[in-house]
Image: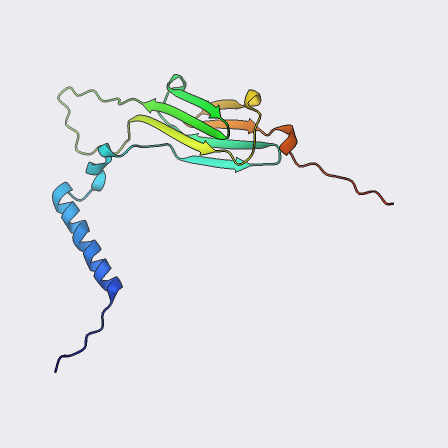
Length: 148
């Protein structure tokens, strides 16, 4: 008579994951950074909103202002740029390269209509700050209730 075994699907998935991780490490080494040249990088972004404006902050360290373009089409704000590699290879061998280089494009849907003529951008300490004032018609307006 055959014994009945309990089947635990999550244990099987975890085992499969460990085997796949081991396969990748055997092929690429302990760091998965070997896959990164095939990935496109994009800066980390924070989007905040107040009653008067929408603010976007993007981390773009090491990029010169002249290498960044900002555009607005409808409610889609696009930040494009390029981070150029700094390597000088005069007899120098790299053992580890973790910094990302190359072109990027990041599109952000704005949560409210903004006035495109009043958008301002500043760059300080590797952070690009884009301030987008809201259009007058979307700003909240308090309505006074009169006694009748």
